[in-house]
Image (cartoon, rainbow, N blue to C red; front, side):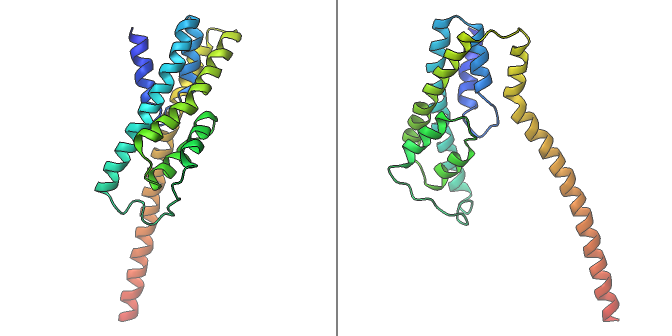
Length: 191
């Protein structure tokens, strides 16, 4: 029961801007559970992706009202009938989904349709993972590797964020020195 609750939670959370890869989780779940549960997990994972996408759009709307200038300087892509099928195709493919998230925000996508498009794209992808997992015979240590791959975007973001803060602080020190030197030069010129 605990594994199902964790799986459901991860299927929703990993389909938001939180950098958590769901494919390794899906593969490990399908690999370690009976076939009927694995196929159910593919459906549950797709529904979780749809719910995550819907929640993401609601959150973007709230943030957009609170910070109205966020999208003003960016090109607003037209929202047409192509947007939701394009979202489903992008959800099917193993490419970063950030472009779709930004486009959904900028086009003010309808949360329910966006969630359905994400779910429609993720279902065949999860089904393919379940089908492949039953044909693969992997060593037992692969489970740990898959879980590490699932959280690696979180770890990478934290590491890059820390490195960026350090670099920013160093740039701030350099900028401070340049500003001090410029002030000293102005003061000397005024004398």
